[in-house]
Image 1 (cartoon, helix red, strand yellow):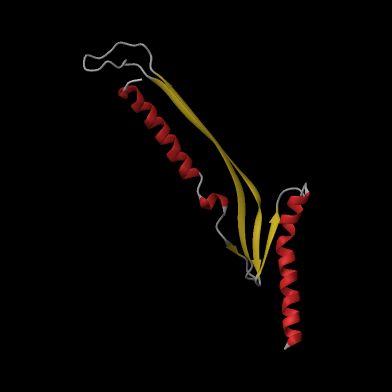
Image 2 (spheres, one colour):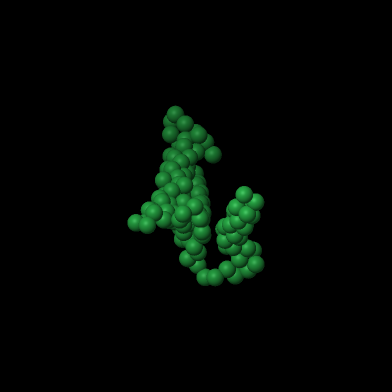
Length: 135
């Protein structure tokens, strides 16, 4: 494929990638924090998936006098993005919790991950209690 035929394809791919960058940034995955009247901070969390495809061709059209490249060119590009809410991080009085918006955890790993903040809070409470007893 000649340089003239490559140029339109690279422009198509470049524009498509730029549009994907505009749609998917860190603010899409971790949303803008919201502060409730009681001081609780709520941070939305989402899962982002995207796919991308492109293609091009150089048809056997007439050649220009200054170039050996065919005048014709065909190409295309496309992308798809899916944004799915996962849940919300809540921060209240120093405690962080993940509130899931999906169905209950389906396997042991999901359950363990969901329990981590509560376990850490309980460990911190026990350590604080022991520290207070020593004093």
